[in-house]
Image (tube, rainbow, N blue to C red; front, top):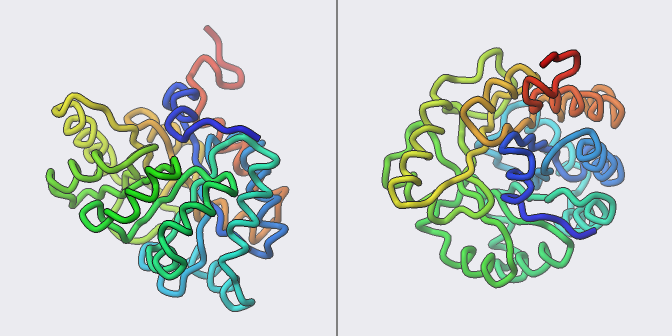
Length: 273
């Protein structure tokens, strides 16, 4: 299927996007494909497929446990491209890949980018790659028409924010808290301040930056809260837990529930004018 760019998909929601993360190959390849299609059909604006990695510094316990199970059974990077091709044949939502940099480097940066684009992938989220060290990836992404999404954290200096804004295509991944991923009772107030800083830094250079907030979001109410000050909410651990405990039906139901949080007040069930 033809797909919009990630930025266009976010804008098409009125900057009220929901991005769902799932590890490729969990609990097996076929189920991970079905789960990804299910969350797209349930209302996710984009899919974030995680590449299992042996040293996931940013991932919380739920995602670590899931990805370790995939590694233990013998994950092959070929499964990623196979999954993307299968998913994009069934849905037009952008499919992003969240990967630590070492697997891309080992595969060959331009080769990875070429295969990702050929499979229908939209681009990469690279949590451990900074814009200053990303020249080879930026060039490959440009050649193959791929999004490149960098992270900004509450601790980021203005210079680092400027670099992330300039280098990112798609959105800036706005980290809501310091630490690892995982559902939390409250999404940190630091996320709002960081989102505002990114908008201010972008405006100061005459541009704009779409901001999607991740880490710690697990309920429709938290999605709704995040969308008061950002353009998208990213949910990972809660979806992975649902898939683990209840399979594809459970992850579909949770995605549909989370999507309720993206609706404007007048669009919500039971709302009156």
